[in-house]
Amino acid sequence: MSVDYLALNDGDLVGRIRDGDHAAFRHVMQRFGGQMFRIARGAMGDDAEAEDIVQEAFLHAYRKFDTFRGDAPLRTWLLSILLNEARSRLRKRHLMVGLDQVNPSALDPYWTSQARPRPGTGDPVSLAAHAQIRHLLAEAVEHLPEPYRAVYRLRELEECSVEGTAARLGIKPQTVKTRLHRARRLLRVTLNESLGSMLTESFPFLGARCARLTTALLARLEAEGGNGEGSPTL
Image (cartoon, rainbow, N blue to C red):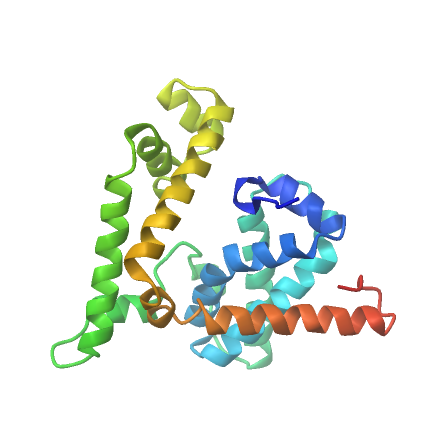
């Protein structure tokens, strides 16, 4: 049976990974990998090293999913592993960088520089694409049916909890989950139609980079499992 991983909460996703659902692990990498890559790049200042750190962080997470208890969101748990890996790399490089000052929710300096180019700098085509993507996303959200739009704004933009969203809207928590799931599906359809390949070309983690990292990590886990190093065979 086909599984809608977008509809699963953190606990269900981790549970499926523990049970050997490799597609669930791939989904986790695709869901959180973009933000993790931006944070790693902001800390390290290098695309290749950031990609390597993200891969190591997911590898550590895969080996530690049995320790995930859901006390914090899966995103927070993964980011803590990522930042620990980045701290270790920086210590080895003997850099005087305080990662405690790195804000996981802050904008990546790369995107800030792209969004606010200095006069006479930047690629006009790339900058126009970024502006168009932001416009199309905002427009797609505005065109969601009101019940879905309200839930999407509270959950995705204001980062309210399911319970907090339900209380503010006067609906049941399960209704919040259902409406958010439907809002995401509507946005996905709308943006796929509007953007096509432009989204993949404009954001460096999506598309080829994401596929390469995911494939490399799954192959690495498979090799380690086959060598009897304790990881499950994928």
